[in-house]
Amino acid sequence: MDAGISSLIATSDGEKIANPKHFKRLRLKLRQVQKTLSRRVKGSNNREKARREVARIQAAIADARKDFLHKLTTRLVRENQTIAVEDLACCNMIKNHKFAIAIADASWAELIRQLEYKAAWYGRTLVKIDRWFPSSKRCGNCGHAVDKLPLNVRDWDCPECGTHHDRDINAAQNILAAGLAVLVCGANVRPDGHKSIGQLQNSRKGKKQKPKS
Image 1 (tube, rainbow, N blue to C red):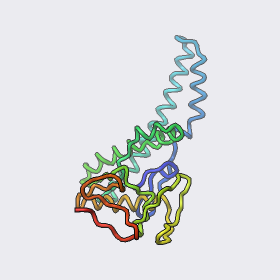
Image 2 (cartoon, one colour):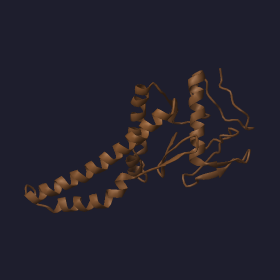
Image 3 (cartoon, rainbow, N blue to C red):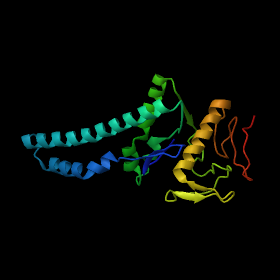
Image 4 (cartoon, rainbow, N blue to C red):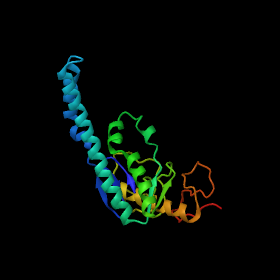
């Protein structure tokens, strides 16, 4: 599966799960009660009431997010024997101020954490692929990887084979293929420029690739 912001996840079989954006839904209300709290006199009963209201809304956001993720991860683990995900560096990604709030609201780290322990419970296999693997920029049909693919481009055509791709679905399919490669031959799947045993490299002519021995 491929994690995202507009769609929380996209799966290799073409399913997209919308991001409920719990924080965004209650952000305005939270902002209003936080302003009210800041205006109350410290130590007063009104300030305590405002503090409780802020805590109530924050708890509602956290509870709604966890409830959604628990239901989603339980369904994914029950329906699949093997789940492949990217090893995302969520802490580093949040440093991007443009997407920090959206990434934090999506809670990818909590999503993967729940998948890990639930996979152990149900006897499923969860495999993480290298975060540098170009899952979005690689054509799932011929293996060609484009140099650049801006985030605003959600659909693209492979310049080598002409296959039309949905960005998220194609990424999920590439993640699955890379995850299965890791399970079968122990390949450390990375893009060109990263040396590793069993590295899968770009194919200039769009041919199927074999890991280096």
